[in-house]
Length: 474
Image 1 (cartoon, rainbow, N blue to C red):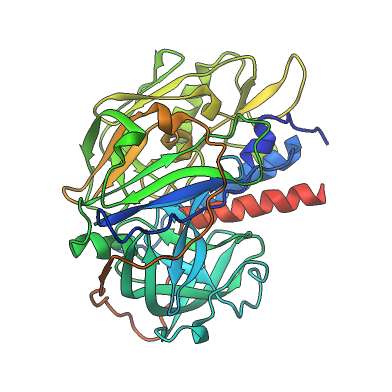
Image 2 (cartoon, helix red, strand yellow):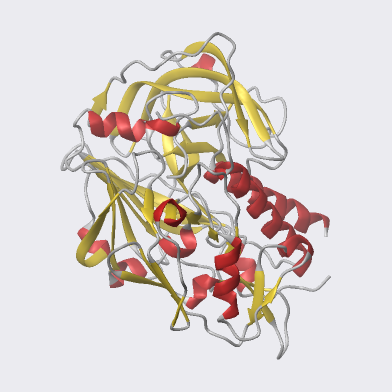
């Protein structure tokens, strides 16, 4: 097998480890979550092909047609950057007494699920939640099933006290899974926290974030992300600081200038904006309007997926670009000697993606080395957005997800946010919750009805695990 260049390959597959900042009961009603990142080892071109194929398949599954999708203070959590920008996770505490777990933070889904401590398959090596150890756990005894194309997780719905970044919900509904497809969860991540709207909750329960903000416990009706970049750092460690996730306030030290807010393009479900313009190496790419322009802003997705015809046009502007074959079908490669600038607009300002983020991986060495682009062809279902805008873009902005009025905001990153921090990796902590609420009731389904979740962050977890498994077998 060809060995990958130490630079992009090792960094890109690193597994993010997330950290939760200790909640401060004094001060604003909200906290910040620090994120962490984990560096992968060198990967072969073949291993990158496996990663790319599974990434595309899982995202297609997440946003494909599905009859199961339904309308449905301040705090900081430090994040962990996993697998050189492949994913970002944070820490959340469950039960009485509370136990902390690492979870992917995903604005592209709306359900919360964790591995069960009595896991039968697929989650034996990750920390699991033991419901019998919590005096406040209530078993709903309702089946729950999460499907990810070639992977899935099964379990039951229950409720318990959930705490994060200085907030708590006494009776948060979540799924406890004891059967998980091999590689879906990789230590130290134990599950996924959906940050989308209740309309797309497969369990028909109010998401944790939405319960908090709708009960008025946040100082401001906003949550925000600042994500780190390690994809271009060949010396990155397995775990690295991943940035911050805030609830209930904006961290003004992490951005400069004004935040540009853009109203959601449709009824709140996914976080949707219209993609109105795009340039590649200075050339404008024609984009359709209307529903064909809808893009989901998704922290649970690593790359950027879009309509095949437009992705083809993008790479036609890059000299020497070629369509991938085999596992790289739907992707494109281009000469590593090129620095590719891509800019996007969602109806307001233009935002530029750093060439470091557009370059997903270097597939071979030498003067004619080829690099893998971070934009790929994605065919979503008729009811799903045409574009999925993931961390390839979000690493370049301070992003804000606003509850009321429903909108998404972007701002330029500050020098502090752009700096690489060499400090200690955040570790999960548990503190007293300064703000707590009780969730409202949730709609009930007929007895025995299964819940189907197409979750981007969880899909990405499966992708990362498959890559690591493939590399270990190589």
